[in-house]
Structure formats: C-alpha cells, structure tokens
Image (cartoon, rainbow, N blue to C red):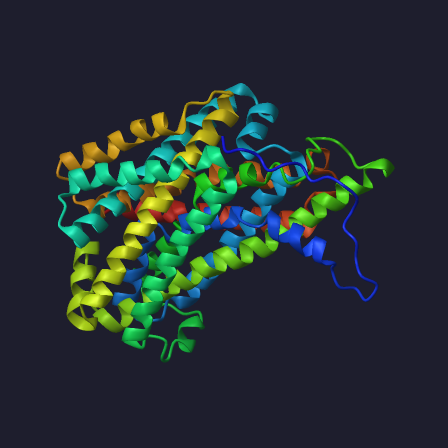
Length: 433
C-alpha cells in the first residue's frame, strides 16, 4: 500500500477575525488535496474515449447534458467514498470485511477482483493502441511496453504518495491539453449550449446515453478513494464518537472533508471537461457517422483536422492508458488487502494483471470490442460497491458526527438505484446484440 501521510498534529488552525483562513490553514487544505486526481483518471480511461467519441459522431452535441449529469453523479459517489475513509480511518474493502458476514464479503471480494482485472484489460489495450498509432508498434509488444512503463510509474508509489499523485495529475494534464488542442483546431465549442438541454432522439440515442452514464462511475475507484483518504482523519478509527476532549480531532476531520470536496470538484471537473471535449470534437469531425474504432477515430481526425490533431489524440490516449492502468493495479492491491488482509507487491500484481490483456490481443480479438466488453464487466460491479458505500456512510456508529444527513442517504440510495438500473439496461442491450 502507498505510504500514509503523517497524521495531522497540533492545535486547530487559526482563523482570522475577519473570517478569512490563516495561511497555515490554506496550506493544510492544499496538503489534503490530491487523491481525487488519482481517482479522476478512471473517468477518462480508454473506454471513455470510444463511448464519448461515438456519441459525438452520431448525435453531435446533443448528449452533452448526459456527460454533465454523469459527472455530477460521479462527484457525489466519490465524495461519499472520500468521507468514509476520513471519518472511519478505514477503507471500503476493510469495512466490508469487518462488518459483513463472511459469506457476503468473500463473494464481494471475488467480484471486486474481477472488476480490477477488467480495468487493467481496458487500460493495457488502450495504451497498446496508442503506441501502435504513434509508432506502428504491433499490439502485442505494445501491450508489454505499456506494462513496463506503467510499472515504472507504480514504483513511485512506495516512495511517497505525493509524487504518485503529482505524476498521475500531470498525465491528466496531458489528456486535457491534447483535447484542448483539438478543440481549438476544430472550433467545436461553437453552438454547444444547446447540448445541455436534456433531450434524446429515439431508442438508439437512449442506449448510448445509458452507456455514457452507466459506464461513468467506476467501482474500482470507489474502493480506492476511501483508501487514499483514510489517513486524513487523524486516525479516529471506526465507531469512535466525538467527546469533548476530541474537538480538535473532529475539526481536523471536517477540514479534511471540506478539502476533499474541493479536490473532487477540481479533478473530476477537469475530467468532465475532457469528456465533453471528446464529444464536441467528434461532432465536428465525423458529423453523423460512427467511426467504429479508436484507429478509425485517429485516422478521421488526421484527415479532417490535420496530423497534429491525430498525434494529440494518440498522445492523450497513451497518457490515459498508462495512468489508468497504474491506478487500476493500485486499486486491486487495496481490494485484496482490505478484503483478505493479504498484500502482494505492486509489481508482482502487475505481472499477473497483464496476462488477460496479452491473451486477448494474442487471440486476435478486436481491441475496440475488447474495450467495450471490459466496460460491461465494470458495469456489473457497480451495485456491489455503491450499496455498501451508502449503507456505511449512513451509519452513525461508523461515521460519528460525519454521518450522512437523511437527505444525503436518500440521494445516495437513488443514485445507486439509477446507476445500477442503467448498467442493467446496458448489460441487457449488449448481450441481446
């Protein structure tokens, strides 16, 4: 597991008389930010490239409101996960192991591992496609190169979480810059306001909208976010109620929750902008025809916007694949450690997780189709992460004063039900052809 940040010590931060935070407090708040940037990579993974670009190609900017809605739902879910770690000092897999019957927690672990494996499959394939587009490397050795480079990124993890977070955030910046460049070339921001008016155009657009929303919330980062924040609450521990002598500790927890909300708003806001840029660029470039594959999207961008746009797309895809594969492997480690109290070295786990991707590519499976199927597997895992998350954050025994308000719990139940239903609809659509 990544090294923990040091517990916050000392008196509660001072506040100026005029109501503004003292510099020390601002520095502390900044120090608590970062986990959401790691999490946000999952929302711009290679699977999102295919889904969002297909939506823009077929329906123009009409589905922008769907991406905006999906982003709001993702922010809500990740805020609950971050708060769970801060309030309890435990992560979601650990709480599942400690508070659910073994006959329930073990199947939860199995499906969570399958979700992590599906995540790695998508990210390796996305990175391999990017290397193929940029340098002509065949897909199989390109997947191996992706594994090696992302493993080097993982080596930052044991040496300090801050460097890992900063590196992942830099890769998010590469993806954002790549699509910002494409937006400037295409002028795709013109007339986008109408895309935020909720509407659909028949059954096909409904299915695509369902896919966008249903595949947005990724279960592996719901588990991971609670692990990234579990050391920010001054190690209060689950079930400990705030007493008069614990006022400072409660203030630290509340400060960490506020910082996590800012962190989530900035990081997932950036990811949302990337997803919207994908859709608008595809709307201008392909205007009514589904390109069908990431390779075809790359070729189409080169033909319409020029080689610079094609290179920017491939670089963004490569950064997405490398960063999200590292995050997926780390999430897998958190899942195993939490559910089973067992850990394996990150690099050893990486060697295991690359096997399915190599097998898929060696079998000659269409890589874009493999990406779609991996998103289906991720969809299957959504309810198994959201239901325990909402239940635990609604428990005063676990959360203390940070327990969800009744309205928040109701909203959590509604979000879990809606996303689970959409994913069920997506599964039926995929398997019915």
